[in-house]
Length: 240
Image 1: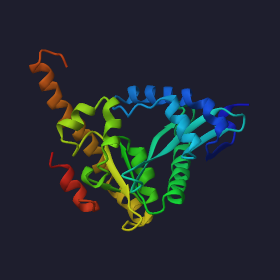
Image 2: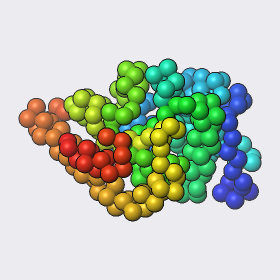
Image 3: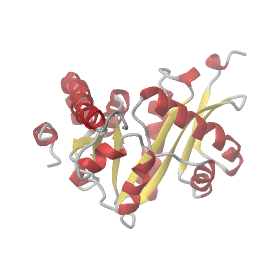
């Protein structure tokens, strides 16, 4: 049977799913290289730990082929939660499964950490849309966790030098946040995204041009060695 015609099951990962950990981390790495943006690198052992903790969501075909994955991380003593490492097998992209994985992970996060602020960093417009549909809003980096362990996880990202050059106030990623105590309804954030997706896409291109231009100049000089409201977001983000 063609895998694309099989039903895709999205559920909380179980101990038996640890056999997919190497496939998952390999795909994370290759996907990051293909995008040229980078993500914090994770080991198979780290993925297995998240599965053991009940903090992971996996998608599989009926016959047991791996389709996608996402996991939960906690920071600042549980005050902040991140739904991280969302990845889908290339064979199943643009099928809607990424949204289902994200929705399931979001619900799991709300169940396990009902008081926590849920945030994400992404360079992908598709992920921004999924987040918006869940009620996330774009925010500045200052509204994210300041936990040093979280930022240390960015060291394996190809853009880490850019992040540090901006004093961790900006980078290639867009920050998004869901605050259970003070948040927009999903209908509002979804509408906001639809109205402003062209601007968000331009923002991503602008950041890429702005940041990489500075590093190209530095590389050449070295001889080739190489506020949380929707409205205030754009104002603050463009103060580079």
